[in-house]
Image 1: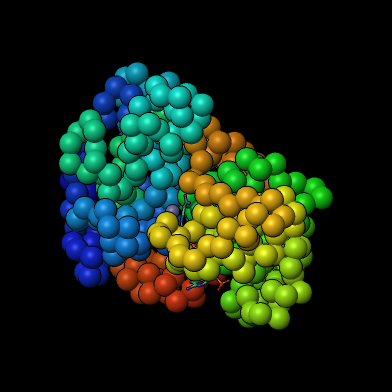
Image 2: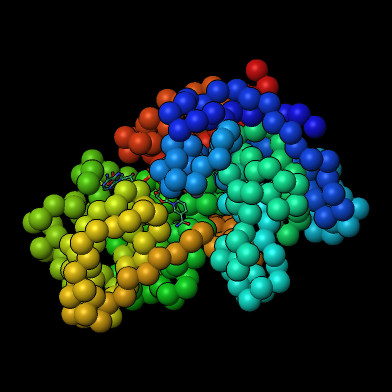
Length: 347
Ligand code: NAP
Ligand code: ZN
């Protein structure tokens, strides 16, 4: 079936209307009419080929919520009319050690990402949520708790799980001092989750103008990323969640960690230069990376968000306004996530 979408034809092209094919549900598939889709900085990295692995056309979008309109004969967890979500992955082997331990994002045969990934079953490559509909096998579909404001839920499915997962993995909670570096889509949800887990939260931002927002989001304080502030915050944090979307010097941030502290990189996925091992050796510090989260953990995150009433702070846009929205994301001028109202794609 052919549906309307927006995509990029090459790395320099703006997003334009396109028609794409969606498969009829197989036995284990759920067909979803997309209601809202979030705009992640990764959408831009992919379309611009920053990671050197883009296949065109790129139809981005991996923060998808919508309504089930059809299910395959073997589907047990979903029925027509359910409100559901799809995040960054749509398939994996479900057999390897990573998959069976709930880390499908680290599948040994490589998970199939929601867009721009080779589709191992259908051939071709996957297309994401900047579109009217998507068909996904049920294991990769999530239940959306019904107490949450639906239009503010999509960012939980990438930005949310990407920040929740490392906080949980490193058992962050009461008594911990957490610093969230970069107050954007990931960062603002990192603040909300770290706070809800009981930590004392500081935002580290280039933008002093975000201080009031940081507090409103639940942070205890904001410090700017300048020399003076860095000096005064030396050795302060047990855990740093680094969401900066470009390579940068890590040493200055590592100095902010307390003894045995950990910095998790969840932002830029690119070569970083000039890390001094002394920044880790002194104080027995850890530098780790983290990629989204598994499906069960994503469902757990949604239930946690439901209990703590956590959704994204969003600005709703029409599909036709996407190129302008991307410019604003690149200028760090979004408070704090754009969400596309897919109704607009009908126009
Ligand atoms: P975003 O909304 O653009 O937020 C990034 C924030 O980082 C900005 O708001 C800004 O905050 C700060 N920043 C921007 N440019 C900077 C620069 N040149 N130097 C220092 N700080 C800068 O992006 P996002 O959607 O949160 O995504 C952040 C990164 O995470 C992207 O690279 C994305 O690809 C990646 N990502 C990774 C995963 C994963 O699984 N690991 C998942 C999703 C996204 P301030 O104004 O406060 O400084
Ligand atoms: Zn994302």
